[in-house]
Length: 563
Image: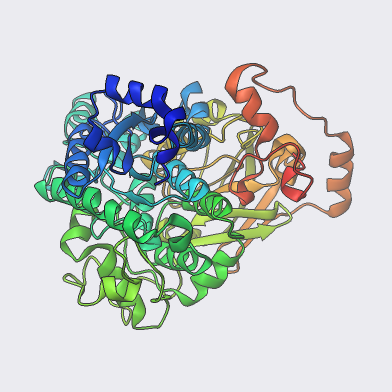
C-alpha cells in the first residue's frame, strides 16, 4: 500500500504513535488509508449539506474495508462574492484547492481519495488535484438546489440578480424584490440552473470521475446520501483494481466532456476549467476545438438561464446519462472510455433513456443543430473569446454597435443602472482579466442589470473577464489577449464600432489596422491594482483565459511559461 510509507517498518514507529493518538487500532493500520476531501463550510449554501455527504462517504469506505480520514478544502460562494472585491478571490481558489489537496495527499500518503465538492471552483480544483496526484479517486458532489417558486413559476438565482435591474427600471416594487430574496433559493445545494457548479458536476459524470446522478440528484434527496455511500464503497474497488484518474481522464474522455457540454448548454466557465483539468492530466485541450465539436453536436437542453427548466427537471428526465444516450444516436461519443464504475461509458449509459423530450430534446428535434457554446475570434479577440450561444436571443446573434468602454465592472454597472446605456450599444469591460483583475471577475451583475433594464435583446457585453453560468444574452467573455498585456481590447475607444457574428464565430473592431497600430504605440501598461498577497503572486503566474487561466512554473521555458 502507498500508505505503508507512513505505517510500516521500524522507522515508522513515530508515525504509528501519531496514528494511535488519532484513535486508530492496529487492525485499521493494516487497511488502506482513504482521504476524504470535504469542502463543507457554513458560508456557501451549496456546501452546507456536505457534512452529511461526508459521513455517508466515510460509512461507505469503512463498509468496504478502508479507513477514512477527513480533511478540508476551502470554498467561495460566487453569489456572495459577486460585484465587489471578493470576486477577485473566486477563480484563484481553484488553484489553492488543487495545491492544498496535493499537499495533504502527499504529506500523509493516502492510498485513495474521495473528493466532495459542489460549487464553482471546488469541482475543477479537485479534478485538477486528482489528475495531478493520480491515485485512485472518486467524486461525489453535494447536488443541485431545488428551484424556487414565485407566482406559479420556477425561479433561480439568475432571476434574483435580474430583479435588481427590474427594480431600478421601475418594473418591480421593493416588496416584490423582498419576496424574490426569500423564495428564489429555497434549499441547500448548488444554484438550480445550468450554472457553473452544476455544469462541472455534470461534466464530472461525463469524464467518468463520478457515479450516475452525481450532477443532477437534488441536494435534499435521500438518494444523494445513498450515492455518497456507494461512492465510498466504489473507491475501494478502484483501489483494488488500481484504476486511477489518468486512466479515466484521457483525451477521448475530454472530447466526450466537450461534446456533452455543447448538448447541455453548460456555463462558459467550462471553457476555463476543462483545459485546466486536461493540463493536469497531461492532455492538450485547445479551446479552438470547441467550434469543431459544436458544429457536429446538437444543443438538446435549455436549462436556466437559457430556458425555463432546472436541474431537478433534468434529473427526472433521465439525467446526464440520458443526454449521452441521445448523442450516441449520432455516434458523437467515445463509448470505450473507462470510468470510476470499473465499466466503460457505453456500459454505464446502456438503458438510460430520455424520459421527457421537453427537457431533453431528441437529437431529431434539437434546440439547434450546433452546440451551446461558441469560440469567437477576430481582430478584437485574436486568441479567442467565448459566448453561451444557447442563451443569446436570435436578434443578437449578429450585431453591430458602438463601444461603451469601461475599465472596471463597477463603472459599467453605474452606467447601466444610471440609464446611460442605450439599445444597440456594445458594453466593453476591460482590465478584468486573469492578470488585470487580477482574478478574472464574473460579470453577472452587469449582464443581469442589462437584462433587468429591458436591454437583453439589444445590448451586447464584451469583457476580458468572465461570466457566471447564470449570465445570459450576448455576453462574450475570456477575450484574449487581455487588456493588461496589451491585447486589442485595451485599444478600443468610446464610439468605435464593434461587429459580433456568432454564427460565423467572429468578433471584430471596425477600426483600420493603421489606426490600431497608432493606438498600440501609445498604449502603456497599467499599474497593477494589487501588489501584495496572494493575488499579486497569482497575477505574476497566471496565463490567459484561452489557456484555462492555469498557473505556470516560472522555470518553464515553454510558451505557457512566458508569463
